[in-house]
Length: 406
Image (tube, rainbow, N blue to C red; front, side, top):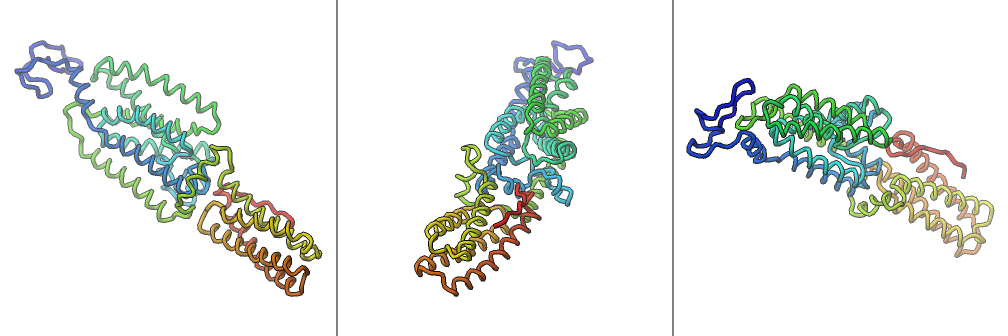
């Protein structure tokens, strides 16, 4: 039995063996040949995308956590302000990073289910090209309609894959097995509808990215044909594949070249799970440490000036020691903030030494007062620089200045 075009009658006496099978073999139904050919195709980019998502997630966890604003910004999350300043690679990088392990798991599962189907139907070259374009479209949708939110994730591209399958089931229903096109049409619409409704009901979900990816997937599938059994990938799609891969690699090269986020540390792995365990986020830890330093320094300064440093010595030493410990354990936000925190910690340690010396002396000497004034001058300089950094870069890390009196 041969495979005929939709407008030609079927014949039971083929003149040529179907799909290159020897004429001596028993005829095989064309639907079975189609399914067999498609199922045999490799899916390297589905595997590669899953691996990339996992690797990026692990790197982010080592850098303070995938839910840490500083880490997200450093790794290329969608930020309208940063894109407006020329960081256009943020239209690509968000597609490959995820916010939290649950986000990663859900998107990875969806990518595995729908990704391998699209890659087998359209071929690897078309698949990766479509995926990158749909991912960019999803980020663009978020940029246009969710301008105030940081966002990331592969869901825009995944919704694009849903759109591709939907159009495939309609456009090519006469060229592929009827049961396949019918199953796709019937199965994909509820999936799209349910996920869009969920996106509208849950505020933290960026539905603008979902809709942007979905519409672009449908539009691309309307003009890009699938890879029919026995056909070869045209040169234009092979070239498009290279461009898509190069765009992704270049985007992450630019992220790495301009990286100003937390250092990669094994200790960050435990800290990155704090939000899931109900503990403080890295930003909250940073705020707590700085505020504690400000309070304890102010208390020690007042005690020395009021002549209470000897009587309150034990309490002052304990408070200063606790604030120093918080500064030592403060999470890394950026190279600039790390330097400022280190300088603040050093200033606090000098004050701690002064308080300890006053306690040992049992009285306040003139040199103690001079040391306090020198230490106060340095503290004010360091703290002013830290507040200036918060004013300029703090918004990127969820920080906002709040002036307080000592």
